[in-house]
Length: 172
Image (cartoon, rainbow, N blue to C red; front, side, top):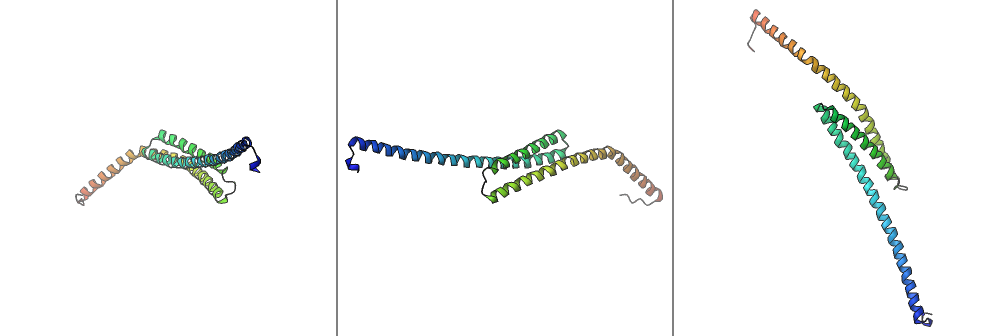
């Protein structure tokens, strides 16, 4: 059959076959690149989720250090950063759910991560006010501390005077 064609027809048929092959290769390349871009987007979102998780941990530590050192402005800044990072975590989890239409195990892991993020936020939101109350109580105690120290010193002095008066002073 191919022998009956003229040279011109053979070249035209070859060009058509090449064009078809190039189209098939182009379509395969397009879908291949699309799947690579989807995978890269997925891993970028997973990386963002991990980054926000570490950000929550970092600022929780900074918050606790600020509590210890009594720096209330830094405490408030860290609280805002922690809440914002937890909100970003939940958004990342929602975006990652788009990738798991069939994988129940991966979808379950994302649900667990969201539950943990919600629990962390709930715990921190209940911890922050309690810590503020503790700081206020500590400040009240510090205000009365000098008075208590004076009373203790006066009491010890009186005890030593009594020991000297009764002859029971041992000199310690």
